[in-house]
Length: 215
Image (cartoon, rainbow, N blue to C red; front, side):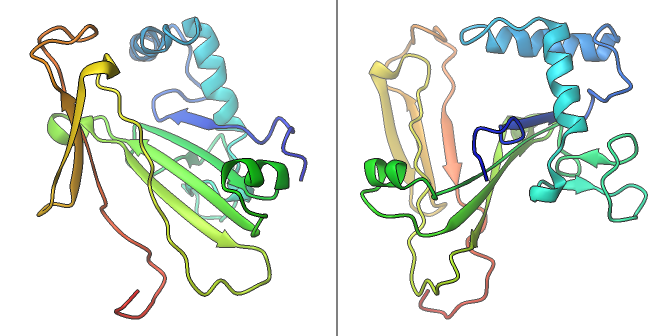
């Protein structure tokens, strides 16, 4: 399909921002104000603009393309005024779909011709205290739509973690946990001062399609 169509975008919904809410509802207003602050280095959306964006993505949630949702009435059809888009229990869900069918892009990025792969990406997080509230879960569905058999494949998760100022970051890994992490190499940071966080990434689940023990 034409990738420039408005329907092909990164969708983002928040559980608390529904079509029936107003940007002036106390809880919604607080949430939108926080989002506006976080987005300030990149754009300058008002609370009303963010509310309209979240509601538009809620109403247009692309279930037909594979986006997850909660079928509240059990009729297996998405009704934005009844059902809930996104992952069950998540405070926010981000979803998008892409493929490798642009030959000029695959040649410049990967040095190969298109295979015929579609990728559906879901990212979500919960509003919770403790470690769970500081986690983002990333899930990837890969579909071979080429009509040809793929007999082997390597899949990698690439990341470029910047802990505030990227010039003094260090990286490491916990081999027992299979955890990669990044942290500040100095006692203080230009962005965070002395209260510098760290970031880690861990593989929770590998491919769920059945394979052999040597895969």
